Length: 375
Image (cartoon, rainbow, N blue to C red; front, side, top):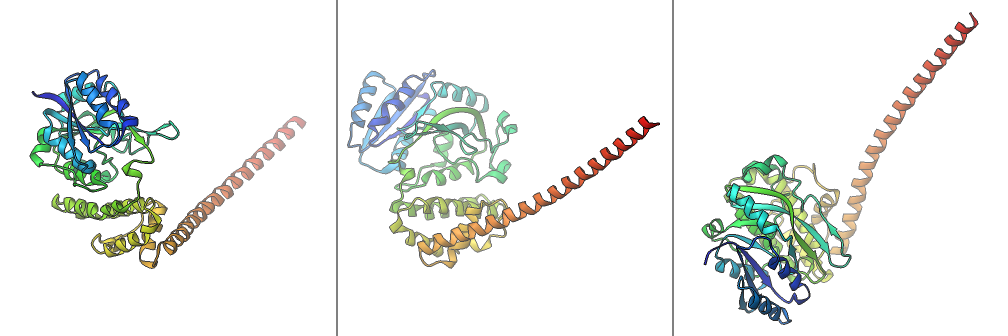
């Protein structure tokens, strides 16, 4: 039976968080939806929790499978959807209770292939919520909020848009037509999936509302630094090919090169120490593949990304690499503050000159006033 929205919910050993996620779905103000719960070989009480909800609410459907990872679970869910639209939810996160209602009202008017919306981070250790340009979509000009757009309209910010799958509603027919799926068994699959579908979407819209809460916890895949970290190289290669196939690679190449470094640095800073040397070697091995020598300038780069880039070819091990990064970072900061210092000195000299002129004017005015009083 067809429904309006299908929620794809991969579940793997999240018993401590699952009920909050499921409750946020049960309590939705919008009712015409299904939840495809893909139990990805959980060994804790997750399956029992799912079964309890499915017994009391027929909208919750359970699919059991051997562990295939997040990508495999999402792909299984995609195959089973009956809804007009697909929403991916991670099982340790949760939604605002009016999320589905607002989303369906929005797409009913826009008929978008992809609808983006805002989300907030929730730190599981501190209990604090946070947001930023990545989560609140402020990088997308508000002029795009009133209609659909496509990737060609936002080439200048194409690598600054959130590539997370969970803050987007996808039209099912669009996803099925592309036969789009997540790279099986891979980390960082969100990045590859986003550009694969975003570069094919004719109609993209933004719903400027905070509808999703993303939990940050130590055990999550996004914070691990194991062997899977090396998947980033294939992910970046695949994404580069998507850019080439869309005939925009040359136009966005400089921004793409910075994006490559940003992602490599992100992974390197989180990878386990005993894998760091291999990771640096892998960067060198893919240096030509990524065309990193073609970086023309560092305009718009963060100084830490620049220092990471400049250290790649000059170091033989990660300890030397880290020292080199620090050295270059301090050199960049030193030049930056030296420039600022010179600017401030010029401003001080100018203000001093203006102050002296004002004092002289006031003194002359005072002398004239006293002379008039004498007369």
